[in-house]
Image 1 (tube, rainbow, N blue to C red):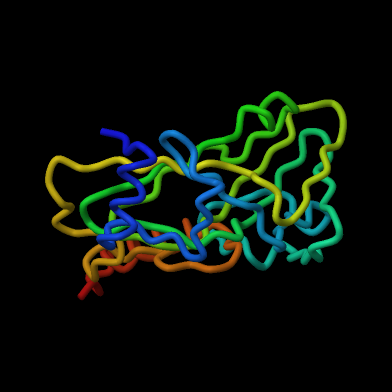
Image 2: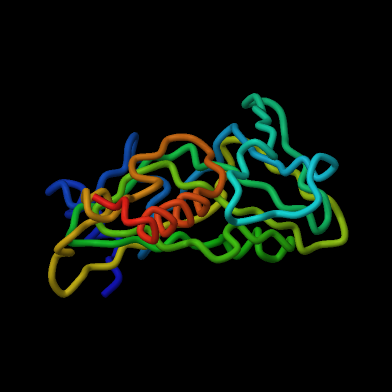
Length: 198
């Protein structure tokens, strides 16, 4: 069950939802608008021949910091990672879904390619997977409304919320734009094969 604006306010008061620097003007009927942060990550395509999920990709990426009064140009069919300015999350009773804004979708901007789900128990500044589907560049401004987050109540609280020691949660309480940590999964499976797991 998705939470209404009234439910979101109640859940903020009782600590089920965390939204740092909550702004009631950004509260929608059943979601909350989140703002674009200042940092972006781009692949250095000229330095690599292929993207290998087994490889740590951060060494193939460069970080770009955009000042509040500047803009970031996302070129046609270009992919970039970004981060929200907002830090938010839930306890084990709720999860959240990050979704695009209709007005930006009509410009051809995808704000997350697949990963919009935020697990119960996690709180962070989510990394966005931006893609420009248009044939023209799109300007993005730090502090602009970039996405909306909807909150959903679970029937029962998660037994092992995100951040639980058993899960190896890679992006727990992240506050910056982060490259893929998929390579850690391959390291883990290699350790299991070699009998070196804890």
